[in-house]
Amino acid sequence: MNRNAAGGARAKIAWIILAAAAIVPIAAAAWSPLIAWRGSAYITACFAGIAALSLLLFQPLLAAGMLPGLSQRHSRAIHQWIGGALAAFVVAHVAGLWITSPPDVVDALLFRSPTPFSVWGVTAMWALFISAILAVLRMRMRIRPRLWQQIHKTLAVIVVAGTVVHALLIDGLMETVSKAGLCLLVLIATFKVLMRLSGSRAK
Image (tube, rainbow, N blue to C red; front, side, top):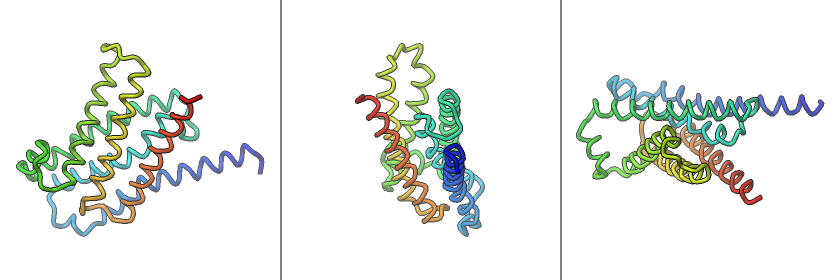
């Protein structure tokens, strides 16, 4: 096997692993017995949250141009589109929970909920919204590229850490093993990209 063929095989394997990590938790949640006892708003909210968690796996890899078969330009463009999708999924997640139980959502948003997972989820949500707003307005605000990278990286770490802890603490529709695997891959991808960016900056 020549070098190009070996590289192509590795790229296919990488995409298969990423796709499986993102799709399997969604499919497993679709078979959850808890669905039979939940309303449509709650189910929609849950799957919006699961989809957002799945997309988080791709965001750092896209930001660093590490997904095989994609140019740096295409990676950044897709990164921006997924950022918008993440914000939309989070809005759908919160809206569905609001319809299900408004008092619980109000308590969570005001950081007075007795459930620890709410604090992590809301913190991640606000970090995501701030990042999305700054991404849209950074040219008008004339934020320097290096400063923007630092801000965006910091907010991304908060989003990832908050989302992962939020997901792991919830006993909901997601199947335990696939959820843990997806969360682990999200953390590994984020850490790997941060180390790569730090290494390139040191050079």
